[in-house]
Image 1 (spheres, rainbow, N blue to C red):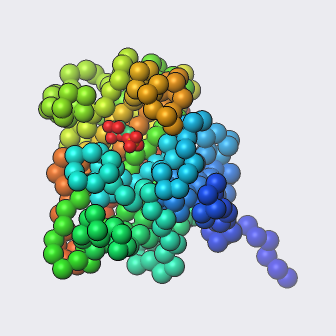
Image 2: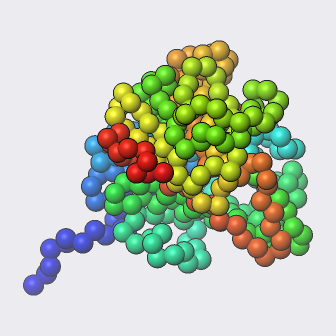
Length: 311
Ligand code: TA6
């Protein structure tokens, strides 16, 4: 007699389809109906939905869906440069490359697999990459969706070069919010930040929480490993947990900049907030053979949770 299939089968929780450019994308599902979709174009998470099917990441209605440009929204991977303060294009080249599925990834901790549906992707430096950034690397990314609907991203960068190299990094997470004026971030108060709107000058945060009433583009330094993004109108709190990533970049373009961006709707700044787990101020340096790991986990809890319980 056969047993009924009461056990969640992680293998059937993954489906591979094509994205708008014919590039593979991987859909992860959990037993309660939550899902995440990651495109091999940039290893970008392009969707993350809760068990009610509600989208939790922002994607612009004006997004340009043309390879190699990274689509405006989701979670682009910024590597080997975050921002524009190096010799490379803004946010580096990894988000514009086609990654491959890592068929035999090195082992991770069992907690990073157990009860999760996940996919492992890999990007290795190509001849073209080496022309603009002459350092051989292997970048492995695991994207996992837990049975509670949490989205976990684990990046591992290995130096397979003969010499040390340094890089900056960021998970450029575009969160979907109801109304930016009603949103606050808790956990960054009293920290120093670099202000991208005033030549990266260093200031100290004075407010009780970060709120939004105009353009904001900052890198908070030495940020705690848990930060809460409270969306009052939706009664929803995003919890951002990170490891190996000292900084958090916070960005909202507000009205004027939104109008100036070709791939962003004029009013869409109201529904979007970027909160990026990142390593920016002090680049990561790897000696030959060394590996670095940077993790970010996103979850959503009802706003009735008080942030002291989370932080
Ligand atoms: O989130 C920080 C940031 O670097 C901002 O300075 C802003 O330019 C934003 O990212 C958008 O970057 P992107 O290259 O995706 O248009």
